[in-house]
Image 1 (cartoon, helix red, strand yellow):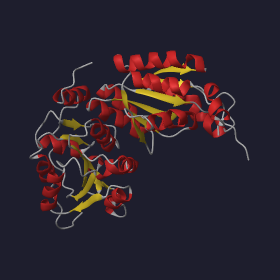
Image 2 (cartoon, helix red, strand yellow):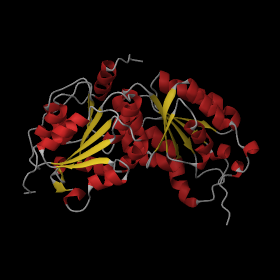
Image 3 (cartoon, one colour):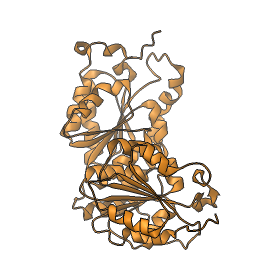
Image 4 (cartoon, one colour):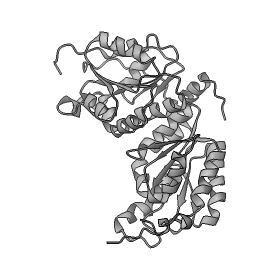
Length: 196
Length: 180
């Protein structure tokens, strides 16, 4: 990709999480989960190392269980394409506290940079809107990222969706913990839930 | 349509038994891909004030949903038919990795007088798929055993975090009747 004005993924994610307060954030399989870790490890970070296509649905389950908490899914275009039906499921449930951000580099960066469907034809903003997520934005500037980061905290006006065009640079991997039980139970503990 | 579904007074009671068990175990999120065998239970869920019915586009969404629900402190259950089990396979890997309570209730096709051969391959491998994926399988073959099977399944799924599938046999549900 040699388009102008593509955003830096790390800068986008650190802006989304800079004033996160009580946000629970879910990072989709791939570079997105690394970006979340690069922005700073946090007890409410749900890092995914598998289950491709499931990030938005994990977000939905959490958002329905905790309707007063802002829930933010940060994932990639390939991961979102694999779970595209979940946008229809979310559009039907309309959880007001759920926000989804797709970091769209139009490629499968983890597997050799093969182009994804968003590079040529698929319009995820159009898909999200057509699935009933009225607040669906195509984001191309950091000012728009900043505005979306603020909107995430409004748990009465979602669901909302943003597709952020990012550059396809391959960055140093910042790897989060890959112990799933630890990740999940750390979130539960931070929300005040006891072990079984 | 299923042979049993014609009139309310002949509708089976076992879905009510399932609903009561789920309610007693404080199940809050009920994800489903519709199936005729689950239709009465789905109606009960959608009319419930404590349960949220969540219609999915494909069954694997439900596995991920239940992981998120548990992160947020709620128990869930996934309702599907046997053909949907194959759609879940990779997402089932979340269960041992994240260790959240997983209970699924599966209405069986492809057995006991099945008319449609296209249902048979997946129906025949449903139990094997679950077992290879680390999900324990219990089966209910008649209405009388539904309450005890559900009780056992819910207990081990929610109290012991034992991933559990209950196969509701086609013998219980009634083979689907195709009429022109």
